[in-house]
Amino acid sequence: MGSAIAASLRGDSTRIVCTAATQSSLDKIKAEMPEVEVSADNIAAVRDADMIVLAVKPYIAPGIIEKIKAHIHAGTVIISVVAVMSVEELRERFDADKKGLKILRVVPNTAIKYGKSATFIAAAEDVDRATVAETEEIFNRSGKAFVVRESDLAACTALASCGIAFFLRFIRAAVEGSVELGMKPAFATEVAALTAEGAAALLADGAHPEAEIDKVTTPGGITIKGLNALEANGFTSAVIAALRASCVK
Image (cartoon, rainbow, N blue to C red; front, side, top):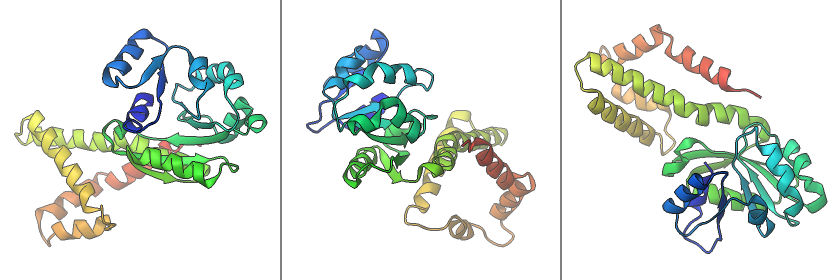
């Protein structure tokens, strides 16, 4: 996730420094982005930074914060991609009040690698609008960014981050059904993915899903039979249950 964010910042005058725990990870980043600086030294990386993106596993985040916080200059923007740390916890761990640090939480999804992420941004109350706008602009480079209330992040994560897996599971099921009907798996996967992309495109101008469904559902036709079969097997209730289960606050 961190390297994907770094990739979205390339192409302007921004100086980008990426850190990692292992040399193999640093070598991989450098190979993919030769213009980016790499380092195993977190303290050196943050010392002159105007913006720090904390994109690490939750269990190592507290230790990293403790090591670097004394070396961060006043007014620095801290963007956290750490899933379980609230804005208030981040503020406390970074001693944000002492240095006027600007704390924001960001939740992208794995499609950020391909510039297709739905990304959510929640800022501490004292973060100015210009900083929020700058953060939004950064993440718009790799998809579409939305500024939301922190209380809504759990639902947004269930829909867009966990939702990636849910949509992929539907595609896998569609492929399995198509194989049963005689299609080759690779061909069925390609077609299912293109169909999902097409369905998303139909909603790009704000159309309601049911309006688009109505256009392909004729009385007595095969589409309505398939839709009714989905509902008879609990499709909508299963999707809603999955979202509820994944919405952990």
